[in-house]
Image (cartoon, rainbow, N blue to C red; front, side, top):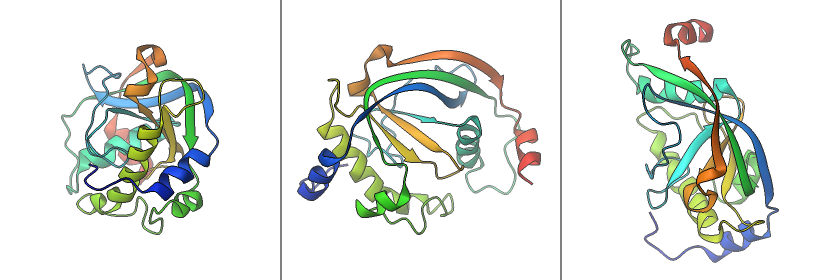
Length: 194
């Protein structure tokens, strides 16, 4: 949440970066029966709680790994009755900033040595810098062609990128469902990871 003036150097750095349109498939895992298009201001890694985003992954495994991490929540045993579905979505954005390179994120002030390596309880220690970057990107963005309406960022849970869609800039037609792939088999996922 913005409590101090925005860093002018960060604004300048983001405004100097190329903004490219993005059109393609992404993946998302949601609780069974929940709409996969619901944006939220959750105060997570790439939003400070002041603007709505839609978190998606560029790989199906990335979407599943991210949800698995949050559902396990540092518990020794995975909760067995949770039912989540995997959705393949089509996204069309006027402009994204590609921040998927950790070295480039480091230049923007993100501590990259522990990126995605903290425990569930410690994960929010990584958030202040990434939230500041996202908040500034959202601030300089708009729905106009060539302006930022999302971020491509590295996944903290899988070897892929994530696409963070800014609700206020993307518009209602920016995200459509391609396929609901049904329930995620968490037991199969756990076995595949061990």
